[in-house]
Image (tube, rainbow, N blue to C red):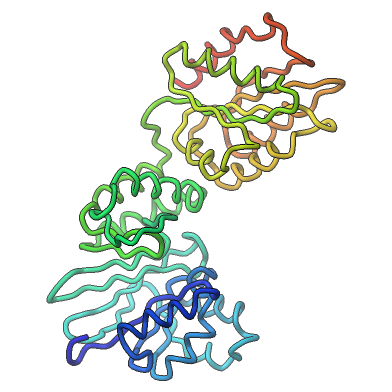
Length: 364
């Protein structure tokens, strides 16, 4: 810290990591020297240690968005009492904090990306870098000792950023599309994310990727097959569909849900043009893993997708009908045709040329 410059702390950590967090702060400065404590986001991975850290910040002014003050109160009123929330400075869009030596913070609320309290803090510096403290935006669930984008395998960083977007932000794409122009207009030289590596060399690229992701742009017309199987009948359908699609030269990936990580599957769902989902019928309904995945997918709302339902049954059907209903509930353009085979498929049951022709046509 230079003479006349204030010291700022932004957000905290999950509560189990508080002592490690406090140790890191002490290596930089005495917590009593901190002048401002900014809460960009109240979710527990950002503010879980709020009640603990404020005991070490006797001289700090607390700052949050207007909604952030309410959400902090809702979470921590039982631990710190109500008086402290009346002392928090509630900032709105465009409010400025001057911390001296040419440095100023401008606050930009981004409500519902992905909580109503969320905001970003943009620090301009007359003598150095302009830094965006971007909250959850542009982050990754990625742990590395190397702090910056250009110090890591860039392909891996972008893959992790894509997976993060698909699993955390995909359902907010409409709001992100509205917020990105505001963020992109800032003269950003550094992005300090709340998760994963920070950006200094590839900022235009990550903003461009967010622009594509939030619009649901499909880079190649690929197919994702998601299924589960009890006695391999649905598995046989999934494998035959895979071969038929590959035979057309169309990229296809297949996941069995008992062995797949849903976060990987939904990342592929974000990128694919068509999503084929299969389930055996269990108790007149869906196999549990398929029901769970469909619920997860519905919440994240992958855009611009074509859907096809398939499955097998014994004494009575039901699973395929539920797949169709749940995919429609997720705004997926589901084909009228379905595949539903009783017991073990016979060779003639596995002739899917006609239905795949219709799928390819629907994919455009």
